[in-house]
Length: 231
Image (tube, rainbow, N blue to C red; front, top):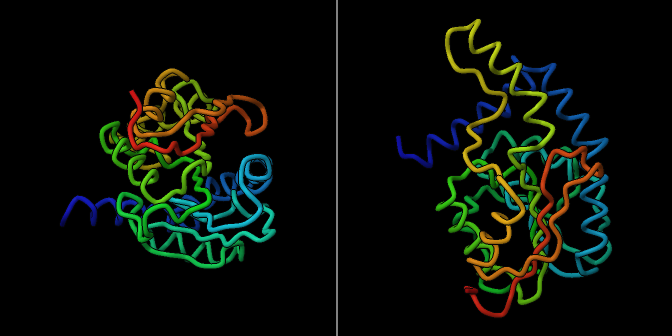
């Protein structure tokens, strides 16, 4: 099995488990996405996205966090490489289209997107791979288009809440337990976020850590600059 296929299988298992063996946690996570994160996504998309154009959620998952986005004259597309996630996303009816694709190789031409966003995605890719993903985002976005990345930091509230539970269950079961697939790239600081953006041709606009999303993400707002790399 290739590395990509193994990743896809892991995420398919994750999304199926949230409606199966981990149903209670899945219901709690769903409530957080619908009642809290969706309001934050609406706020940031209202503020930083243009009223028209093609916008992509690159790693849409169940799409519950995006259900409150104002449509206006926007065409919204959800991308995920988990078919199990896309089946859940279809229920939200927020997107004009859904694509099963890898965000490391997005199926769009250069400079066509008016904006791009995701939540809880970037932390699952090692720093070098995350840089390649940001390069790919830069490729498909129009100059000055906004990217909204809800990127969990090491100091986020979700880690404080979930880490003790994961540790306890791992000890009791005698094997590692995690609520989510590996999170290998949580942001250690705002400075690290700025460096990641500037290395791939994005200009930081805002780096917010606040109560709007329950202190769970560092909300990274950036614009695609004219050139690919900044030094």
